[in-house]
Length: 317
Image (cartoon, rainbow, N blue to C red; front, top):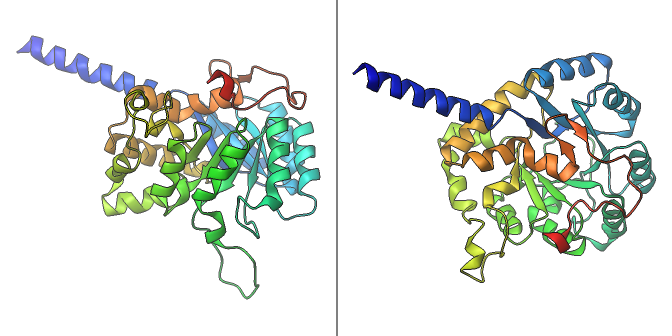
């Protein structure tokens, strides 16, 4: 009996270690810049406690704050720019972010659909400069006010990323919020596009935990990496479905613990493998961005010469 107890205890401990190992390195693929030094200090404290780094989406007003934070705390801050695609200064802002060593660009609130030809030159520039392109997809929040605006969630459906991924095959395309509520649409774009990823930030996990429906994602993200070998209807050699999902918070540092808990529940409810969990927590983004998880340092000099560092290389996939 004592032997059985010790064996059971050892098994539980080993499972705990394995589960912890699956998230012993985290990259938050979607969080927004604060506006003062207190936010910087809160980020450093919280993210170091979780052995985590953060892709920080930065508007030009906070450019210097995040640039300096990334220089002082490179183990925490991964700087991304944030532009409005219809702003006549968008191209210039992207260039300024790139020259300062920022490695991605967030787009939000287009006046036309995401795949409209109006934006193609901007996307081509991001591909050429080796910048991750992060698009808001799905429902968009709004405040109650009397100011008209041209924002529309319907212009940001995840399906519009399909053309972008095909036209700019050396770019990494990330959709925010898994296209909430168009999850099926988002997943099917991933199935044929190995350069497309989604974070699952926002209200989705709150909603599905409340409804007891977290397991629904197993029916949406249904394919395995080896299925393309046996059928012409899944990408041959493509990644597992869940490998297209990356961890993110879209919240202040105080929300980190809650987001980790909800993401873990999402993984458990869908019986995601330990190997895929490690990728989803941070290793996928580390590979995309060229970050060594052991040192939290970029393995390449920023900014890389234009055209020298494709985020995704289809010729060596």
